[in-house]
Length: 210
Image (cartoon, rainbow, N blue to C red; front, side, top):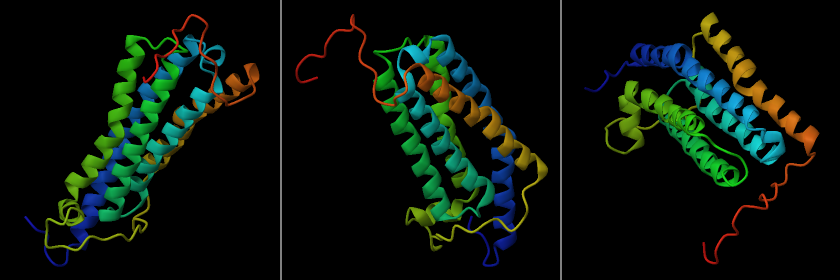
């Protein structure tokens, strides 16, 4: 069903629904496994195994996931924001692949930590998919499948964020980013470089062509 010509009130309702979902569902769902992931890194002595090189990827992923969430919280959702949210999710996923590829030969990644990674990887896509679902006219426009024209305005929402959103953003910085900054500092104290750490002596050398 297409929105009527004067669809501004409905767009605002959809924007607020997206903000509420990100505030009350997605951010809490991200922070809990994020803290558990940080604890696993600490337990497996990241500072003496994969080092700061891996820790940098963790900060990158937090910022990449946070970029999509921030757009959903504070910008009017249009085709441009939907595309940017999916783009940030894809970049986050690419960084996760890079992270595991580097880390696996250097640090033990337990089954529990792998499941935590799976949960963290899917959440940026969940946020983007929710925004697309509650803004169907701009999603179809982005795909060239509807009568509406795609908008790429990247405008701030007209309503002020509620206190709960401000608290959620602050919690994201405190529990979603700060632990990984502490992790990076801890790694740099042991080995003051972000260069890749050498493979352990008992790790088999890669075969030619692999």
